[in-house]
Length: 110
Image 1 (cartoon, rainbow, N blue to C red):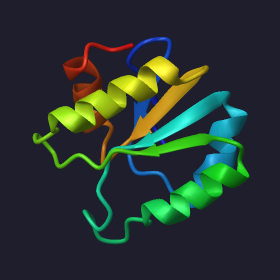
Image 2: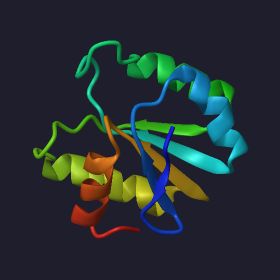
Image 3: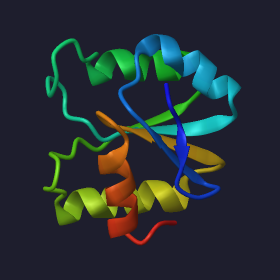
């Protein structure tokens, strides 16, 4: 897991596994956003499995499955809503973190 800070509030990383969620909570994150559609890549854990582990770790979890380069206005509005409503730091993930960073920039950040 390689986490990159986009700003003090929003950080990105590549694909997570359910085993990562307890560590993410331990790092002080309060919210996780999955921006990767299920079955996008071979061996990728399903969002439902990530969500179950996030709930067990006490994390707020959101699913905004963006196809690379094709974020809809509705997905942008949903991300903006998560950014404005989240307490503490947010960790967003996709295949590499790049899609999450681009989406954050597209909605104008927090």
